Length: 144
Image 1 (cartoon, rainbow, N blue to C red):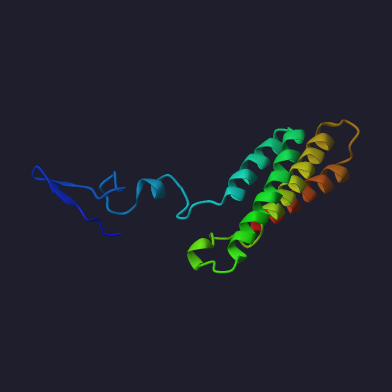
Image 2 (cartoon, rainbow, N blue to C red):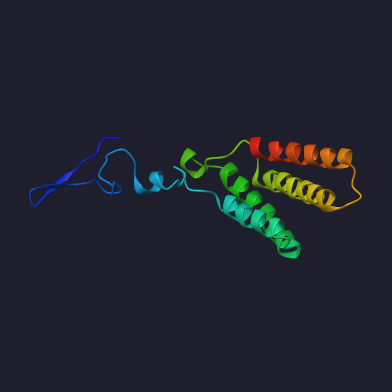
């Protein structure tokens, strides 16, 4: 990315957003903000994931309902007559609701593995099976 610098008092000032003056990355890019604005459903999904992982199940259930409603509205907004390409948010290959379901499966599998790991009467086969299930759930979540 080329920098368009301005002359200020004999020194070159970086272009807006290029606070480091390297002409390569903006502040947002340097700190990992995606190059597109996240959908509201993505933001709700993030809070849902945190709540469910923290065992705040009641709150997570409320957030999941809100996530489903929000995603339905986003889809309807994009499919309305006269919608332009600019109205359509950048979409992942899967929906936020599907992501939530996969996250829930992973967290549940992780909890099962932890429970079996600390239980004295668990066999090595049970622990390995739970571990494999947790890995499979994690892989499904990360590649979706």
